[in-house]
Amino acid sequence: MIRIHHLNCVDIQSPQFGKAIGHCLLLETTEKLVLIDTGVGWLDTQAPAQRIGQQMLDLVGFQFNEQQTAIKQIEALGLNPAKITDCVISHLDNDHIGGLADFPAAKIHVSFEEYESFKSGNPRYLSIPLAHEPSIITYPKSSETWFGFEARRLTIDFEMPMFLIPLFGHTLGHCGVAFQYQNHWVFYVGDAYYLKAELLDDNHPVNELAKLRADDDIVRLETLNKLRKLAKENPTIEMFGYHDPVEFPTLE
Image: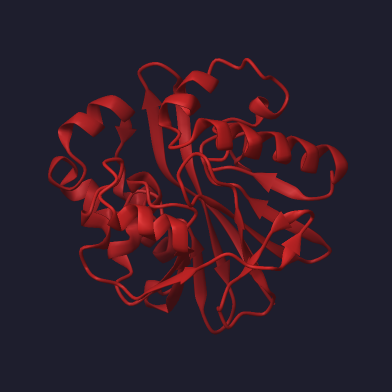
């Protein structure tokens, strides 16, 4: 049996856009633990300027609290962080992978396009989150589909199938993560939107930030429109992103 734990792994107080969070998932079975994104890591909280850089700290507005890091929350749940066998990553921006170094033995699962962009020297990425040289498994284009989206089946030995769902635009290889839980689908969309209100408002103010941060804004908007259609036609899918406090179970 699988248990899902929702973890807010960083609070962000943006100078321009207000409060945001870092909504990660911990999947628990008796044999293993799997993280979906990691948030800011414990090491980041100990040396933020060295690991993230002062310019990024000033721009983003991270509110560092080591008790919010995934490793500390896992310990607080009475679980053993050493049981983290796999980390499924939506994309390689630092606020999503800063915690990878806290789980050095975990395998990293990410799209082929995202890792290629990371290795190319794309200036949006920091190298330090992967400096511990973890095992990285990449997933190329697939012929499988999920509700009209391409679906890349993860090679994780788990109780149910899990898929990377390409949601490109924010980054060149950005993906969501889909899996079936009990009698419905869970769909984590990472940064495909910052706020769920974007699904209903073409001119939401946060759109300017999303446009600024997109590696390909045309593709980002195409992805957003596909998510709008999915949400409208399939209301039983539990869809949520990384940054919206309204979507976090205890922060509504």
